[in-house]
Image: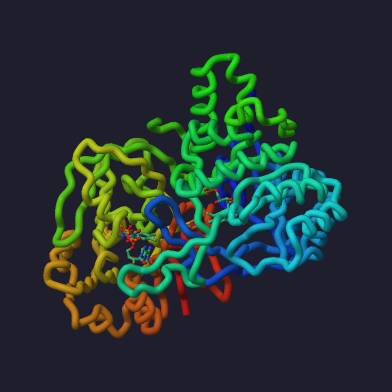
Length: 291
Length: 231
Ligand SMILES: Cc1cc2nc3c(=O)[nH]c(=O)nc-3n(C[C@H](O)[C@H](O)[C@H](O)COP(=O)(O)OP(=O)(O)OC[C@H]3O[C@@H](n4cnc5c(N)ncnc54)[C@H](O)[C@@H]3O)c2cc1C
Ligand SMILES: Cc1cc2nc3c(=O)[nH]c(=O)nc-3n(C[C@H](O)[C@H](O)[C@H](O)COP(=O)(O)O)c2cc1C
Ligand code: FES
């Protein structure tokens, strides 16, 4: 089996680093909103002992700017393009999705239902997915937050609302204080926590959602090597995305792919066949594979 | 995976061996074997793996002796302390050169640096044929780093570099703390200033390093770190 390796949204600019984008099986854009956004004031990032915090605030050119200036250049990379879509209401999600619907260069739409750094839409995730579903016939992935008491319940709700797949997980809100001033290191205060610290949380979410719904899952959160990717696939992911890792290692896609293949090979043929969901033993119905 | 060949513009990523490091006042001059990396243009920077940390750290190239890349590092936190603690024959991943360096096509260059802002000056001075330079430090101990730039004028706090700026300073190429750069910008019409921001990636991937340029947030790692101004 081959496991597609993607970037996590907001963790790579394919136009600045096309060689990195070409090393992926699909490129996921930074979240696009209806209107352009300057994003949050700096400082926007802080390293922690086992991860990092960010509060970028969805800086992006807006859907019109994206379609005019970015998408044509992205298309020339000849890597499948996933567009991450965000907004502050169901209407926003529907607006961006309908603008993307007629673009042949867009392979998949990923709905960012869970950015911890901007105001949330008043609607539920399922209502946002339903609004997007009504606006596009593209393949729709719903990206969920790990910060819910029952992520499997959210997964069932977005599946019922028409999601074709899940992206698990987004960052979780965290805070770090400056050692001298005891003030938040990030201008906006808290930020989204990503990197190795998120790994067991992401793994638990993928594990719970794979058991709950029969959808392909892009697993992400703190992946640093092939073994981490293997864990996500064993928990039920059908593809793996790299986020924070790309900041320290832009060569990670090829490395993680090779390490994952070696991990699978080492465990033998029979293992590879039942790899996806192996962590569930016989309790999980075989889920659909990613396209 | 040494030299596995990622190319980002002129930047490459490679695992480089640590050579003999030196102490220069409170700073460490970290020498790395150059591998196949290009030293780049003065003012450009490299992302250095900081052992045990999640993110690499941006460092300006200080000197480029044959076969080497040398970085001057001030230990201010966990990442820079880990870099200063590297020992000979350790190896770290390095990505670079990154960003925009100084424009060397200037008529009357004057180099100005404050504190660890001296880091890019030796390489810059070599490239420009040792132009005049003014260095400011916060203590006599920090001022020991002035040995890296012969014939520079040196001030120690409470005196400030701006006190030594001539009436008509020509083209000021400067690196140092933000208040120093702001003061120079207010006094001098033609400047090239090397700014700092916290950076996670150094190659435009994270949008973490933005600074305000003409009313918009621009990523300093690709728009800078050297920003030009002409009044
Ligand atoms: C383009 C560029 C070139 C640089 N070149 C050099 C160099 O040649 N030599 C050198 O010693 N340092 C250089 N720096 C600064 C160096 O990267 C930071 O000091 C380092 O990342 C701090 O990491 P740390 O873990 O040691 O400390 P941290 O714990 O991350 O930071 C210590 C303190 O410094 C502040 N800080 C951290 N990073 C920055 C930053 N980039 N700008 C302003 N404040 C910051 C933090 O808020 C904190 O108060 C450069 C920075 C940039 C952006
Ligand atoms: C700097 C930064 C920016 C991000 N921007 C976005 C974004 O625009 N949209 C989104 O859906 N997720 C965004 N994320 C979340 C990542 O896509 C990913 O879900 C998360 O970082 C967990 O993966 P990781 O631990 O491998 O980084 C961002 C993460 C980081 C670190
Ligand atoms: S440091 Fe990541 S975009 Fe500049």
